[in-house]
Image 1 (cartoon, helix red, strand yellow):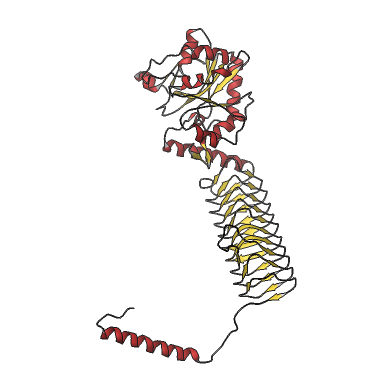
Image 2 (tube, rainbow, N blue to C red; image 1 turned 60 degrees about the horizontal axis):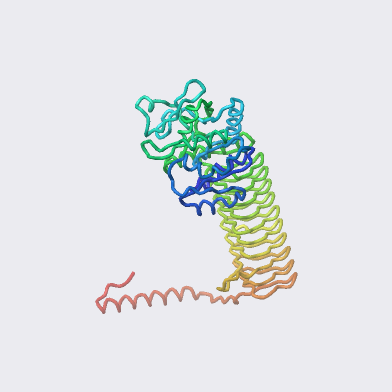
Length: 455
């Protein structure tokens, strides 16, 4: 359930399994069952079997033994924390199992430090036994070939072997690894399939191993995108989750984070941006430090630097959104510009609109429902203006600087709403003298009262 690149770890195992031809996919659950079911709602075809008492891996597989009928064929068994396994490896392992005519095939890997893993005791390509580390002799602990926890069984052989596994070991558990010993004692063939990439065998036992696995996954994803024509300025600091889709000639600068998003060809993402659940159109530029969430950015748009686009926004093509502009639940028409320090929320903005610095759509009256602002095509809005929703600004209208719009504006109207300026020549000098005299009187009063004057 721990998140890895913004997804529960189990999702990576399920994705690998789903990419392999299969008749059914099942999860054996126990502790935290409901949380796991909730996290896996995106996989509606997964079946669940409950292991009421966690008494070992063989005991867990027995919870699903009703699956193993006479026509089942092969059964692939994986650990739920084996998130680094690749579908191609699983496919090759199944082929090896079929070609060898084996009752069981075990995925193995060579590790420089095999601590914590069961050791493979073999003769050539055939496995004699798998020894859990707690039960290893000193000589067996020196073996570097480890059990990945991934197996391919003949279903009938597996069912027979499960019934003969006992719990006479250091942990008092029913080990799935003991099925190998049972099958060998029955004269059955058990072979190994060694992973070329040993990282695919890594499991997750603590947060340090989780961080290592996430780093390996990030490197894999970034390497794949770079080989397909995506430019990463610094792949060591760029995070792209496995659900992203990225077109060719996209350039992504350092410290960008992309989550479940689509980047069309030629898009540019500058440093320190975070893009989540969004689409970035072809040729668009997302400048330094922007946050884009749940939105669609059109082709050739330019956003930022330091802009925030959130909550169901849609920018048509060729829109310019500048620094420190926030958009929320807004649609913006093509060739519209909002270049500085504005908030545009719950709004429909047309084409060719010019929005001046500091414009605000005032969308809340304190109630639960946000009010909507509609700005039609070719409107000019001066700086430091507000549209107090619900309100409509008609096409071609001109909103003067500093105006608060409270009523609908007909098309091609000029609107100004501000207090008249009053100028008093020379009064500033007089005001400063009055102010100084007032401060001096306050100081004198404090001193007479025996108090130190406030700064």
